Length: 376
Image 1 (cartoon, one colour):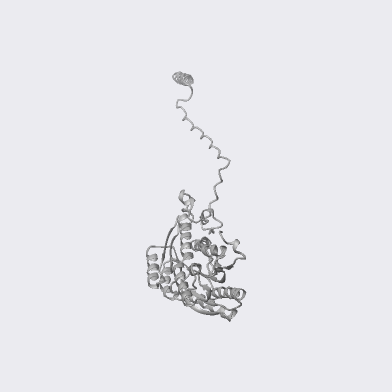
Image 2 (cartoon, rainbow, N blue to C red):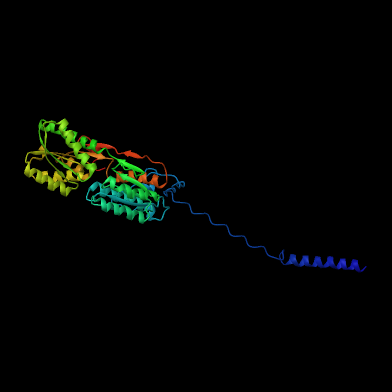
């Protein structure tokens, strides 16, 4: 009887507790409140561009393929993507040394390449060596000490830079060589300079035949301080002798920029007033020669200036029917040159295979096709 009564009391107690729980709203421990649902994201405006897809890791994207790697317009600030804190595509560290920044093409190309490298989150230092090989060797050694990923070099003297570049490559630094075929480069970007000189000389010879009956006094502005430009100057002289054998080269001197080109041409005209053709290894000398001819007081229609580089100044003179009659475009202007270099060094930075030698495109620009290139 005691056991039954205890059981009855237990059941009664349980019923009482159940009833009390029911009156108080249910469970003795309240459930945790559920987190409120996140409000829906506001719809993007209709004109908001879609975010570009990310480049897969290790994929080499050329400037033409990667929007943020496209060269900005001349004078623009660094690429907007980097300025706005977007994802860095190639934070490479690049050191570049060229022969002489007084040359318009070399200086403009360095500026344009800096925009591409820095605009994509990298570091870029460029210098000239004033065609002094000892200075350039020191620059290479400083680049190595600073921990660059890539060296872009336009050698003052090919043989002299082989050893320091070999030391750089031993540390894993990639080397891009502009205008020389050297052993210690991952890629050499080349011109056959003798043949380029022959192209300039042949164009001058054809103009002499068409405008002076094949007979004219000629001056050559070369730059024998650099072996590659000495070859170009020799090509000019050989082609004139071959294609206009009655023309005579009466003067020859070096000029790498407009100041030198103008001064040397003025001297030529004082010593040889019958000179009617100036053939130059580059656009700097050609621009200076054109200015000297304009200031000579002689009929400008009698003169022809022929060169390489097709700088904006040369093309403007051609457009204005001044003395510049032809210039050979090599790859393109500074922006095109920078984009080409950037494409290759991006592949090198990503450890992608590259060609050991790449030859540049040569395009003679004359009044006949000037509109395709002037102002572009």
